[in-house]
Every structure is written in structure tokens, then in C-alpha cells.
Length: 94
Image 1 (cartoon, rainbow, N blue to C red):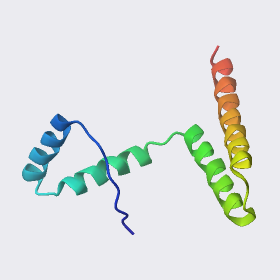
Image 2 (tube, rainbow, N blue to C red):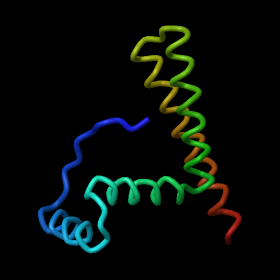
Image 3 (cartoon, rainbow, N blue to C red):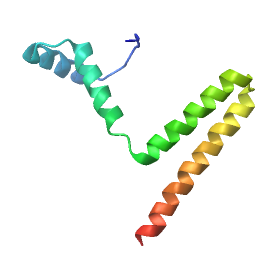
């Protein structure tokens, strides 16, 4: 299901998208969706782990009605886990 959103981009980027839309016979919206899809497909394992943790947090908050403070604490915990994994990878390289 497609959802409507607003995106702010530079004027020259919009001009380029309009030109490409004419050349490729696609709408500007379609070109933007393709770009978003490419970014989403290029997610690293580390980023995927972070997204998984954030998804779990989101599910738990819906089920249990956590406070904003609790949500922030869970998000910070996820951030620490990701940073810890990143440090482990950097240490192994040396």
C-alpha cells in the first residue's frame, strides 16, 4: 500500500527529476520511489539489526503502553548495542 508523504528536495534536483521523468516516461513520484527502494535495499547488517531492535521496541510500546521516558531508554539501549557492535568490528580489523 502506498502512503502519501512530503519530501523537500533542492530545486536543481527536482529539475533533474522532471527531465528524467520525460526521458524515461515515468512520473517524478515513481522515480523517487525507485530511489527510496534502492536505499532500503542497501541497508547493512548493522543497520538491519538496529531496525529489528527498533521494530521490537515499537511493538512493545503498542502492547504495553510505555511512557515516553521508557521508549527513549529503549531507543538509547538499541543505540548502545549498535555502537558496541561497530566497535567490535573496528577492533577486529586491526
